[in-house]
Image 1 (tube, helix red, strand yellow):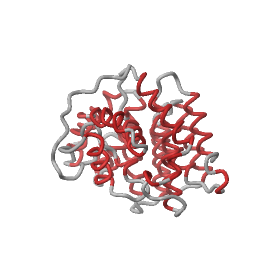
Image 2 (image 1 turned 90 degrees about the horizontal axis):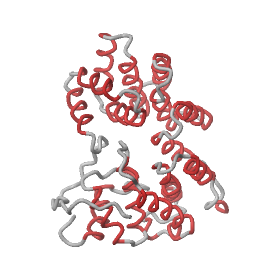
Image 3 (image 1 turned 90 degrees about the vertical axis):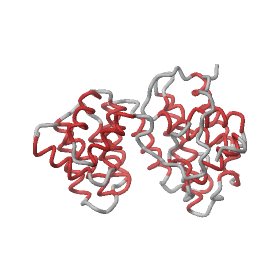
Length: 318
């Protein structure tokens, strides 16, 4: 049965959407605020409480690592506690993001990722940071090696699979194999290999969204997915059906990146004009919008999300 949505309670504000990568993790948002003010002990306590919940640890460390001031405070923490694997992982993540932004040397970021991995051999997060780095600055071999290291430590790592999907989607393919691109093979393999009920069931739909992004940027598909024939193919329909079946069977288990999957799902429902299903999902998402996939290929994610939500929910919601 379809999980019952909460009562309609979306903001009627006509302002822009505030995309918060912390999503519904209140403790993470609080620790991020404290860290921006130099109070790294809140982050230390948060990560200690996270333990070996690798999905949540990866989510928390990457969100914390994206903040511009994190490198400085992570360095302070590491000076105070040089043997802390958590401090090393945070510094690795933060430096990887700075390298992606062109504000740190990729070699230095990779060195910090490997140092953090040595302090906590079972932790996939330093390798996730290396995978983030490799997506933007590395070779295909480096991307795959980092992914393999993450998967060896946590087989169904959500973030790592999404990153690998994006990397593969960006690889060149011929026009004749657009519906048989290697990214689809990867996504189908990963979703089939995952445990029952895994959010990786959404991966084939993510793969289709990522391929549209790449093709649209190359001028081979319409930028608006609703105007793209690529979204009228059997690949799109099958990916959406699999993702929606997963949602219908979702057993309510907590997952730190659940809302990313729901945004992908409601995006596809909106593109294909399935407003009834989209309405229930927009209601479930509430304020937890994610930039992806609404920003693809190069669109204003706030405007795109609000327009789709208003179309599904009707006048009064924008």
